[in-house]
Length: 162
Ligand code: RP5
Image 1 (cartoon, protein in one colour):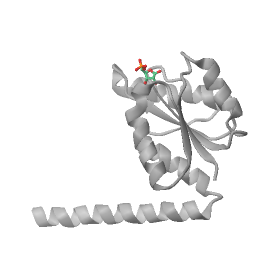
Image 2 (cartoon, protein in one colour; image 1 turned 180 degrees about the horizontal axis):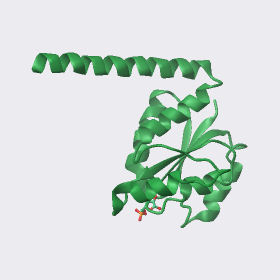
Image 3 (cartoon, protein in one colour; image 1 turned 135 degrees about the horizontal axis):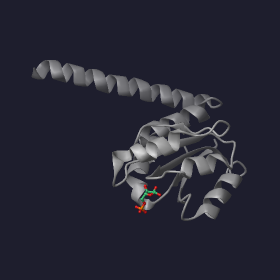
Image 4 (tube, helix red, strand yellow; image 1 turned 90 degrees about the horizontal axis):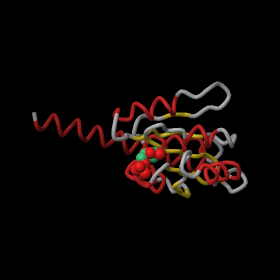
């Protein structure tokens, strides 16, 4: 199976990435994580993206906050699918990163999830890899069923409590 590449702009984005890693581990999806910044280490970010396909990656998650150019900068240098995760910063509650990540010019797409949505980013990455992987598709279906059961248990719990 191809790997999920995870790039974060700073180690301060780690709490968001940990949500993604938890899901990838649950689904047994291989991944590799790096701290590369579009602004502070532009050469490393570029080189990672340029070599990602030949290095065995199938999809890339890019998490960044503030003027979040990381996902776009990665997408500019690969035709692998890139999923942007806007992270909350000290001002504007993540709206700055959300708009910076989602508003890509035509020709260079970034599939953007919600602010801080590491879990959905990982699920989307797994769904992309599962297009050609029946075993992973079955694991995703099992997870959906387990998540559904968990909500129905909460429903029953609420009925008992009220
Ligand atoms: C962005 O700036 C990073 O992705 C992070 O969300 C934000 C703040 O970075 P630090 O100052 O915490 O390193 O590039």
